[in-house]
Amino acid sequence: MLSNKRKRRVAEAESSTGFNIHPMDQFQIKPLFGAGEIHWYTPTNVTLWMLIAVVVATVLLVLGTRGRAVIPSRSQSIAEMMYGFVYKMVEDVTGKEGLKYFPYIFTLFIFILLANFLGLIPGSFTTTSHIAVTAVLALGVFLGVTILGFVKNGTKFLGLFWVSSAPLALRPVLAVIEIISYFVRPVSHSIRLAGNVMAGHAVIKVFAGFAGALGVFSIFPIISITAVYGLEVLVAAIQAYVFTILTCVYLNDALHPSH
Image (cartoon, rainbow, N blue to C red; front, side, top):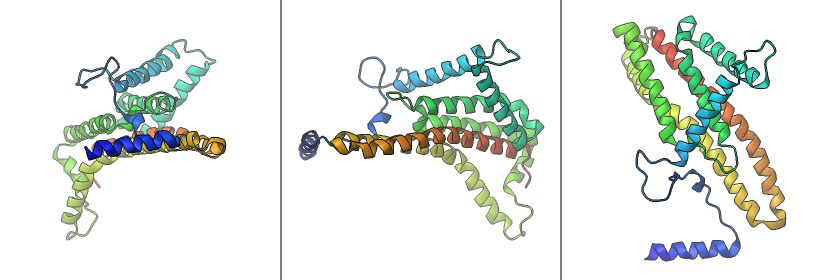
């Protein structure tokens, strides 16, 4: 009862002052149809915006490049630029041997990039702000490169954890550190993306709350929102790049495990 009364008092205070900021509400997962409990098969706002990202990627990369004109259209130019950028990244980090895995890495990059940018549209939902989404992407990379490492190298893949260039007495200690850091990879890989995306959106929502409460002085939080939004555009691209290049680094470890 006390907690309910406290909630009512807070709500009344917020309504009386006009100061009502709930920056984390924008990350709530809601069913698309009706209300009630969410099950694994329930279509939600996350499902919708992931589907939109896939559709946009298909339109851009398939329909936008089907003409293959000598003088490319805008959509073809954008698609070719992203293709070349990721192709060069994979080749530089993993070598020619890693290019056979380029389609998977390119798919990751495009999905994360588009999901990040779509999340910047007012009223949209940022799917990459949820650990549940980024963790699946990171686990896919982690399991994929680990299985590939053993398939390609057998037990030699364990050489990734044995620092042969270090003094013999330190090698067991370094091996333990390397093993721990290896299994932490999917955690850091997923949290880095979700945390950066979520933080920026929460800051924008806080400034928006100030803009609604300050009246004539709302110009100051509006300027801040504009600045943070511009930063978020950069973060959306940078985080897609960081996730992709770390995937390339992990793939290189699987292909060339020896220190």
